[in-house]
Image (cartoon, rainbow, N blue to C red):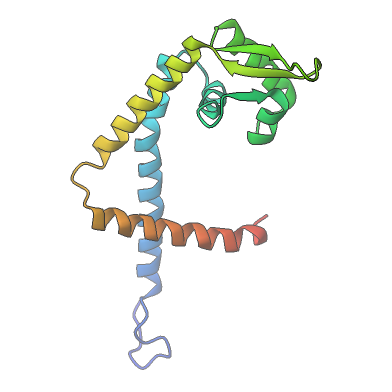
Length: 164
């Protein structure tokens, strides 16, 4: 696409260039997500869990105790699936159920020692992998990347209500 230098859009990039940058951005984000998810996928596989089970186990890093209802609220997992998922994690001895002392109807879920060790080791390996990915990336480059990411997320937040 050629541009008339006297155009009212003088000084702005050509549409074809914007399309190239947009496509490059999309490709970059997709590749970055794939590269980062490799470590998580390996940990899920090593732990013999599915992605939803691993997601739930990671929540126990945020706090030591959850109810099934709280897990449903924090994740996008429906109540019936959470129930089966929790039973599976209990059967694997990664979680245990504990009745509330104040309300016997409430069942709290807590990590077992095995579950705590598994998720702790998985997090350590994931963080190490991510640190290796960032090797030779300067603080200036990282700060620029984070600033750009924040702007993209802000733009998404503005667009999200209008998306259907």
